[in-house]
Length: 381
Image 1: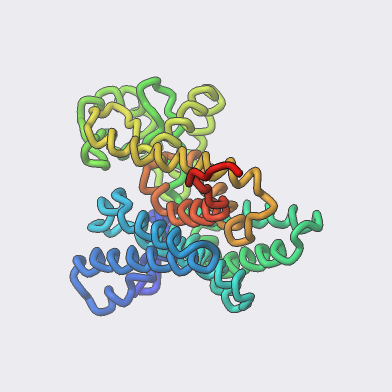
Image 2: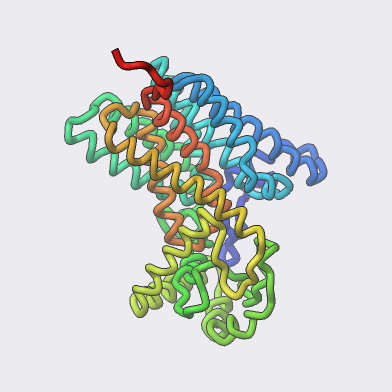
């Protein structure tokens, strides 16, 4: 980007991620700082994610619940595996918390400049993790349908404004990709390969992504094993070799075509793979051709806590749906669309981790609305 381009020219385009995180790191690149500073910056982003979640919650719920939620996010163990890595996840979590904060401040204070900030943040989310680009579009049409029905007109209008601003933020990137590949609304060329692995038809493959050279030596590190390599090659070698002989957009399209053929031929297996993806999002398990490890127990305990806490909060939210405030509803809409779309590709726990602030935000508000239960024994009159 310092040299004026984000991807090599066709046919060797490289759009496996959006430019958002790269833009955030530009000052470090300009100063030619060692890579250790890029990783250390994750600690700052993580700290700010905790702070913004707390600052948002104190506006809408009890201070004790706000503190507890912030502490839970600060102690969320999955993040500590990502802190040393120069990945987009920590920065994405920071943007998610900032989105929650600006949306809540707009609701609490009615300042329209925070409406604009919220749109910019969501747009930058899409530039960082391109799946949010699709989230924006689906959320826009969802809010539009609610808006024209006449219910909650003020906040439906606010939602549409936020999402329109986010689209404008992403427009320069989409114009760049259109100039590069001559396709409208083109976010990246990694989705085809991810969808291909998600559509894997072998009973011993669960939709997790594998490297193009068909070895199972892939993160997460504890699951590494090469014992499944021969089966991977037997199942995929001919097709993968043919597709990898192409480049860029053509390669991405061929992967998508192969995935669609797999889905049409084995729809039930695709549904099972979707189920496995959701399991990996929550529990970081299962992985194809992989060993069992003790870390899985830890992941299942934490994932189960999140799952059942969400179920409890969901029941309370459904019963009291008319009392849920606007920022919680809108944040939940973004979460729901993102979560459902994530299951369509090769999903991992780190893809779920980035939206944990939304769950904590929702739960803290929801449980804060439950009247206090008096357990003190009193004598009858």
